[in-house]
Length: 504
Image (tube, rainbow, N blue to C red; front, side, top):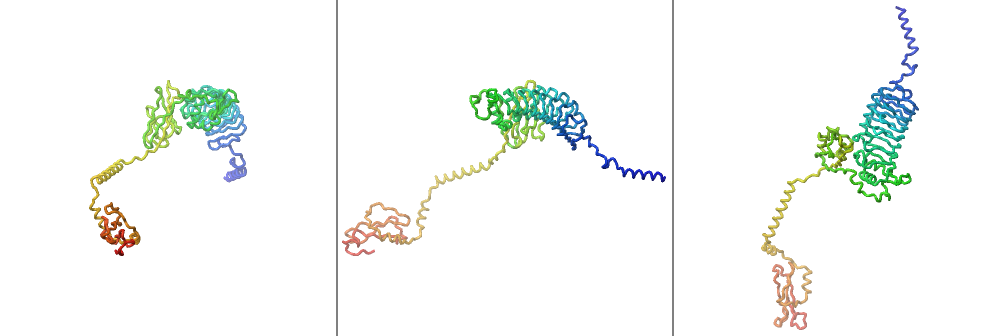
């Protein structure tokens, strides 16, 4: 028994002295099989800038975002993404990839973003992108792409953003878009290529939301009158792809680089362009006005019956039955779009996409919806009552004017109710300094104001002997006798031939 106790104590001492495998004496194990010199953080794996010529052999299965950019990768082996069943984003930019090959992305059914920019790819084959059914963004700019297979993007039904700028493409088929689904594609970058021939009717037939994201600047486009009028109309409509890069839209007048002409600057090249050939290229959008809180119904009018109809909202949301995510927009069984309660968010461009055996994928119908607040309606009762009252008052005033003449008795009474007034000093002075009046008695009297009374003095007679005879006017005021003015006749006291003084 003692022997066993001593043996156990000796083993414990040895374990403490030597340490455990988890102690500082042993190097730490790689976490989740993280490759050497790479960085692993949760579902992120970054092996950027390590000079790798091949993909690491073991990759963590939980990786959702894999960054292998800025390395020297030249080839990708088929099936190398099989362990990464949660992969959502793959960054392969700034490498030396000159080809892809069939089956390279066979096990990437959940991939949303693929960045292949800044490589040396020269062609894109028919099966190079197989297995990317959920891909939404594909970055292929800054390569050396010369050729694209007609069905290179055939399986990318969810692709919404495709960047092919800064390549060497001399042509691009807008008719079929190389198998792309026009119902999802929102951005197509073809800038800085070698596009010298372009189909104007194919451009005009594109959906409106794709025209807004179609970048064609910095290409040797032909100086075609129809293309000129089409781009001018896009510029006037404010399409961002044309408006933001207006100075970089150029064309060649004589198919030589020295004859570069800017589309949106005055040039003699387009002076003789008539707008007649450009008419009818684009179907004009229909303008609708809706009031907040009201209902709105949009119909997808196509030339022939369509099998499937989808809509694109102003927020670039693809609308199919039953409708939008927030439930404010409904797509009915007949393909029409219904909004039960119009709000400000519903303002903008609605595009209908119709597909069928006899319809092209770009058969569209556009509605430009403007949303306004309803004006407050005046109350009918108040307006009618005010009008009726005004008519009644006007009628009463007219009747009073016609059938109620002014009362003369009232005027006489008003005249008799006057207070006696004393003459002012100015009036007395006028009475003293007045000249003798020679107005005959039968002359018409002049009417004075309310407080003035006219007095006439008859001409002197021999029988009066210089005495004063007064002639009182008709409107003599009995209550104000002080205002009476006395005037002497021709033989007054001031006369030389007077017999005696004048007394008043």
